[in-house]
Amino acid sequence: MKNCDQRRVAMNKDQHNGNFTDTFSINEKKRRDWEERQNIVVWRQPLITLQYFSPKILITLKEWTSKLWHRQSIVHINSMCSI
Image 1: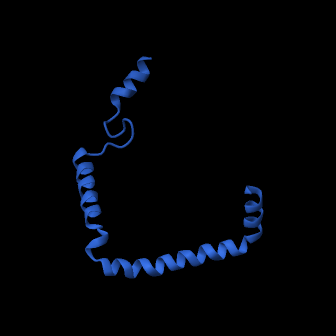
Image 2: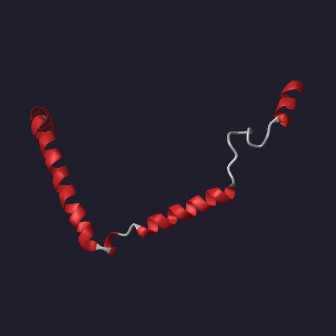
Image 3: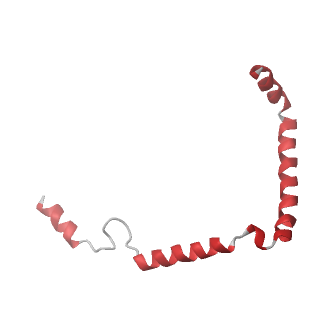
């Protein structure tokens, strides 16, 4: 038991329970993350938002339609079972 206690006392704070990180750096990172999230505003430039949104939604709908088309037998079986 004494040997275990000696090892525990000999450990640095960096070695104890993982790496020690400065609380200031953690708070600074949280503040920077918060500021970045505040800059992500949909309605600040609505036309640009719509410009990016429109093709993305069309591509997503096309992919979903394609997946459903390729799995139509599974969709039919599931729809018949649910009735």
